[in-house]
Length: 449
Ligand code: UDX
Ligand code: UDX
Image 1 (cartoon, protein in one colour):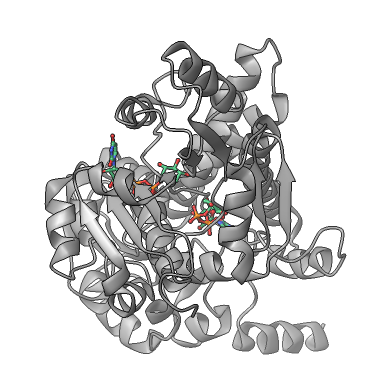
Image 2 (cartoon, rainbow, N blue to C red):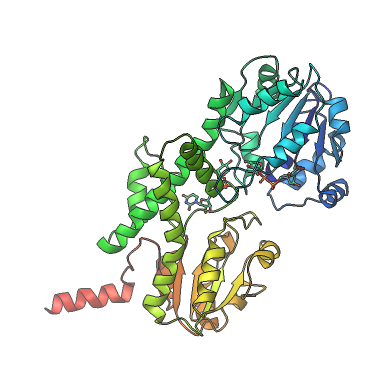
């Protein structure tokens, strides 16, 4: 990429999924980057060349740009060398659904005022946060501190790709030099720039995530209707998605959306509307549909296995989606807890998320492989569509299992391959299809009639 030193140096505060990818991405674009995090163990690992999160391509990006990356728990280096300080600290939900901005405020408090310095907000914050922060700058005599809202749209599991090839870059600034400086930083990526005001930039992020979550809850409800009407939601989504006004993306029905962003941001937007006296009905339904969707697997297991006490259920996958070790708001958490409460014996396997899962889930066992998880199981539930589950030889799974039920929670498997292995396939919004034999038998008896 660009040669060293030609790009302006930056600071990144918060070395989590978003902060680390942002730091590595800008180093790749040629900037010197001072990356700060309060977690001393995380910084020590980064200094040792380790990568504390599972994110495809990130280790290579960090290694390739090692000379341009400086990791510290102390913000001094970033203050000394950089004018633009990207803020990517956590903004988790509070019990009320509001975003917890305490980490953001802690960062602001640590930044002394200077006319050539600006905060660039990457963390997802409620609309109005930028205005409130700029007011607090003035009250603290920090009016010289610039402020830019530059929301992140990267997806976990493809974050490096998303950083280097964004659909758009949103830059919200109400006045001053900082907005232009951020636009300049992103220029090498050649992506469309949405140059706007701070409040609108903040709302672009929340509304985008809320819309994607709405699209998922919509197709999940369509899937539930398909089950009652004999249609196949995969076919329905294919037909819908060819309409460019709809588009094929985020029309994959399943057992609900999870992760660090959609649940939090949908709640935050609903709460934000409520705080402004507006009842956001649509999002209320999106959240409710998603919670119910996580539990539909239980009804499918009951339908085939009857009462669940003592039944052995294998969970294939735990992470909220493939290619990440992130368990935040994963559907598997609800599923495992429900199955436990119903007295089922749960054994789970996930290629990378077991470590995080052990901290969040109790009362289940973990297996070192899919086949070992399926050993003696009455049912297998595909929870996360990791590629290795799509490449499984289902005859081997049949051998391992005691029962024959496969619930495909992500409609990611080939029903015919599962059925050909002598297993019963149950998807989401895919009414069980007649097996080839059943079809032939059906046609034969039709003909005989
Ligand atoms: C974060 C925000 O949580 C999310 O709202 C936003 O959309 C993107 O940035 P993520 O990168 O996934 O998401 O958060 P996380 O992986 O939790 O990383 C946050 C990092 O900030 C952690 O490493 C934490 O140690 C660090 N942090 C937190 C600080 O350095 N200082 C603080 O005061 C608080
Ligand atoms: C999301 C946004 O996509 C990203 O732009 C933003 O910056 C952060 O939040 P991420 O949470 O990493 O990214 O995951 P994403 O790929 O969006 O998936 C979110 C959840 O929706 C996952 O649980 C996934 O399994 C589910 N999903 C996604 C569906 O159920 N169906 C779909 O069609 C797509």
